[in-house]
Each structure stands twice: as C-alpha cells, then as structure tokens.
Image (cartoon, rainbow, N blue to C red; front, side):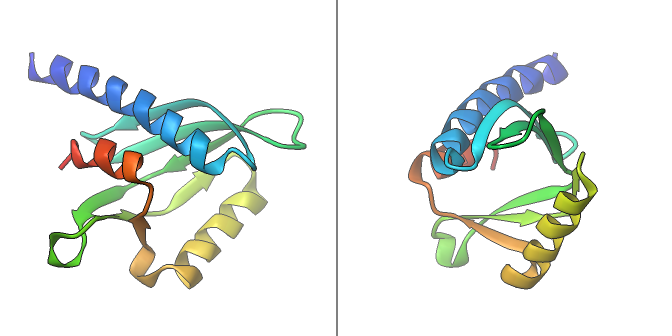
Length: 120
C-alpha cells in the first residue's frame, strides 16, 4: 500500500517537475518524459534538444534534497549524471564539478521549489 502511494506521489511530482523544467529550460529543447523515483533518489529525463534528430536520455543516478542555509530555499545535491550521449555526459558532470560547490544546485525557480518541497 505504501509503495503504491509513493508511486502516485512520484507520478504527480514528475508531471509538475516536467512542466517547471520545460518552462525554465525551454530554450534548449523540450522534456518529453520525466520520471522521478523518490525511493531510489533517481531522476530519469528524456529530452529532445534543439537541433538533435532524436531524444537524449539523462539520468541523475543519485540525488539528495536539502533545505538551504537557515532553512531558506532548497538545494539539490547531484550525484553522477548519465547521458545517452557520452560527450554530453562528460560535459554535464564536468560542469557540475567545476561550477557547483560540492555539486549543490540551488533551486531558484519558485514553482519548482514548491513542488520539490513536497518530497522533504
């Protein structure tokens, strides 16, 4: 019963997250599918990037979601990110390592923060 409830919650969160990310990242392409697994702390995204002939699959293999300093905002700590295109996988992980402090990604989009706060 609890597993079924988690699956329903994940499905709703996935739909909301997909909408918010498409709004935020729309200039790069369109997310065609997004599956959030809060039990395994994984995120699977299928995206049709502008100029690409087919979809690219991205998987955040492990994530953690924390409240920011002084309980302000949310922070996603990204684990390794896998991509169906090896060059893109290397680029994303290199950027996460060099541009983010300890792979911590602040959630600045208000609607996205609200959706993700339901997971905490």
